[in-house]
Image 1: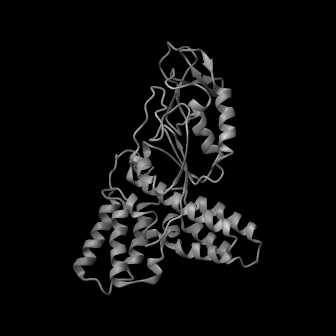
Image 2: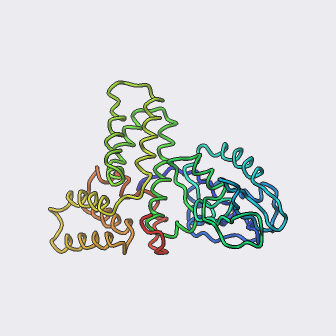
Image 3: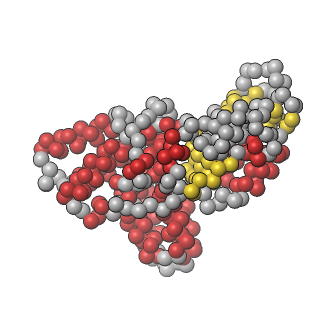
Length: 324
């Protein structure tokens, strides 16, 4: 069993931490609850932080020329400057965050699909478009390559697996970065080879060249370049076929010892996964059982087969946003 570094996750405080929504309620988020034993959360409520109180009159995004403003129709207050000031100060404290879980569709925290109204007239209800909230949009701009999701999207098992894989990989890398050890970087690259192969083979090869360091470059120069390529490698959900290619590669280690019926069963599970009917973790769990049965020092070290704690494995799926 592998050990896991503890990711640092910034989270909207209304997601399980505080009853701080505009209506003085909190929002249930099973993943946040499940993550509590494994990550270090940093909760914050931007709206409460700028003094809007709990409960409070709702705020909304409104058109302001080519930009958007944050406006409270009931009071006529424009709180854009207050939110921008809080955001700038708060994000400066989160430079070591591995990921963010933000309240979806919130005019402050939303990362997409937040309603934008045409102007400050509270009587006008038709929306003119959608955007990120002021705080959520700033997070996306300030932290490229970080794992950033809202609680709604994380109900989809493909998006959730991708998010969990990223935050635990980035947390482990944060320890490598702090160590100043080239030997640890080499081991990190070796242990994540199949994970990187599934995510992005071009970046996998680039990371291999950086790790080899043929020119003997200084540590900081090497590790900074590695970090840039690692974040790029993990930025997109792997294609089903990319994962199946890696799974078939692993299956090859055991094919001689497997019966024909076992092979048919496993190949059938690959196709069930390809159809989006089961999560990747269901298939990698079978490979882990084969590793335990037949043994393989190389595969047993690969993070691909246990990218995050097994306690976080869940097959629940909203069916929304699949493959996004």
